[in-house]
Length: 514
Ligand code: NG6
Ligand code: CA
Image (cartoon, rainbow, N blue to C red; front, side):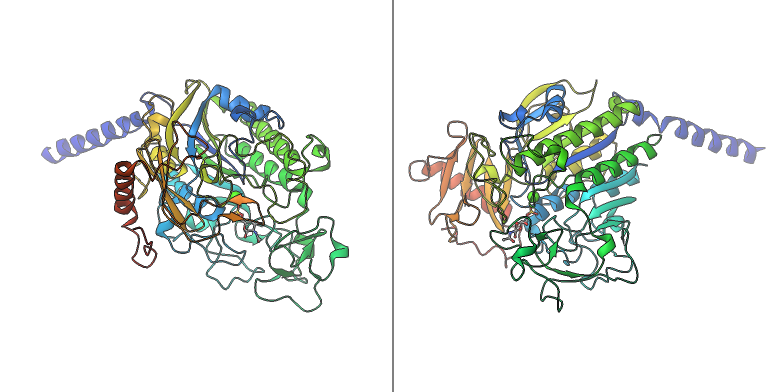
């Protein structure tokens, strides 16, 4: 009898607990699907909602008008792989020495034991998918592209992955679905090398007559679809992508993913390839702007985003999906091909009012369009809170009731939901291995020896022999270096910078600060 009573008690407790558990989900908001839409090299001024009048982006603007538009939203870095690393892991990329722009044969940058956004979601019962650009390395450095390629996205938390390995301008120029090259003919195996060409294979350097888009700097190796790339590749002919179809290919996969998982919570990381080089709009977008292919692919990207939103709406999911839109780094015009991006830019300002661009420690390198949208759940508005993509891991974990946190990821859920305006107090910005500090409205850029301007891409990198100190509240364009006149502020900023950067291993910490 006593035994039975106890059993009853235990069963009752378990039942009570089981009934209570879902309450977490029933608090203020329902637990939504999460879709991160991530553009490649889209600048702060490239979007209508951020002031562009020459390139129209009605679909992104709709998200901005119906959600929170951040005016101080940052990618962690001024280049792609480091920013993607930070977004997915919640850790600053400068803590990982390998977090640099990766070749197509680079090994996986994220440790399979690291916490990641998709792992966090998965643990909360979500299905997780990535469609688009990966650029975080694959395999262990010895990849056979004709076998299953691992570890990759599936091994760091994505249940489904349909990706390009690196960038549109790097080999291998094939899609990879859950580790397998799509459409590969086993009689025509793929070989990839970043060291030397395969005998007899044409290159942009030796066979310019094959090119439909000429290279300006770099990009003179293997020719695929009349465009020469970075790196060498042989074989895999049936699997090679058609550049002009890439946007549609990714869009359809992303839409299918949503439809297939509409009856369960999902996290979709939709990483568009535009407007990174080579810019290859589908023919139906050619001439949509007066700016040439760069403008046209931004219009194409905006259309894709609109179509994705339509799919969410058609599936009845728009009120139950948090959408985050951003870009991996700032804008660049000539990034290695003659595609008229610089000659036809006209009055358009890809960086908006900001200084610099991709690769730069100035604001335009890392400050990017950043929008959160959740129909019916986010009060529309504009926020000037400082937020970074590195904060998404901890903040989205808060959203879905997960205890997971990223090393450098702040809990800013209320800010992302537009309910609080208190963003980060401090943020380290990174550009090609160099770092700067934003604290409050102030920017500190320590001395760096490199060239002031990268002449190839015509972008000011932020390098100077002396400290640079800018007050963004009065000088958004970083024109007036106050280091000479604001000694106290300078010392305070240097001290903060050293405290944060001091956690870096001594090898990379060798910055001559004084
Ligand atoms: C650079 C490429 C550039 C682009 C970039 C990566 C040259 C000369 N330039 O090395 O074209 O591919 O890497 O861009 O090769 S990112 O957005 O993926 O970081
Ligand atoms: Ca990029």
